[in-house]
Image (cartoon, rainbow, N blue to C red; front, side, top):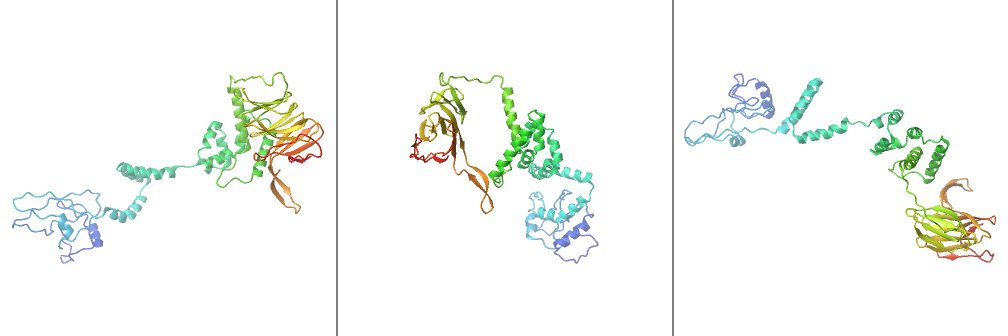
Length: 431
């Protein structure tokens, strides 16, 4: 239907822009025989029937009010091929009329995208209460997949990491109200939380005091200095690795676990077993799940700490054993027979014998390489390992100290029992 004020001699074909403009002008002009938002197509020239019978007019088709504008060709023009396919010809006389089909709609996605800027500006002009109502209406009519996508966007937007946003002093004050069990769980949330919690020395100092395992400050500060010194010698941490925790945290963990084991262990396991018969136990060490004891009966015994069972007996010294030291599977012993012996704890075999002292070997120690700072002749300070390889330092009642190289596992066996000047001990370094 054409309005009376329109020109009858208008062009037969109307473009998209003109159709949209006409739709805006004609929207108020909707009668009972036309669809809202769509021009009436009752005057289209349809394909004539086979017989000369009057075509049956199509019933009016209603369309939802929210349907987007659908510009159609001018009623005066010839129908396009698509229109011919959508609006079928009238059936032959005597046949029943077909059911009306929904007219072809333009691409809704394109229409919506074109109208999106105006919709957004209109939505921004609404008051917040009305904006909330509009969004809730959309959400109530949205499928579950759309709601999930919106949730995945809103969740990270609404979350806030308060520990990293607050000042350090306020964060420390908040964490001070938490028990250490909660702090341990919070440090596993992410790397940022772990770094904040582990590096807060005030937090762990107060925990040490509140749990009554703070011993005055001298021992705690000495422990912290020693740990910091070791870290400086070890160098910088590896890339992308977290810095080490503050020494007060390590100290709190050690003391808390020790006290808890003593207090909560109401029925401690007690293992008692005889050792060396009636002989005197001269020295004893605990190394790598082994109890190693020596006696003046010339023997060295290795026991299991869980059962007290004798697992190995090392025999070879010709006098009482008065000094022991171990590293991994290597045991060093000193005796009144004036020798130092090296033992393989896996096989129980004596691999080396060092002779040189003229009296009882009363004490000994294994010295491992460590990073130290040295000043060269040019005045440049360098960091290097000293000693270059593990060594043994022995002390004797002959008023001397001797330094020996700790044999490597791949080195051959060596035995030197005397202390004569004509005998050369390859393991002896300096005396």
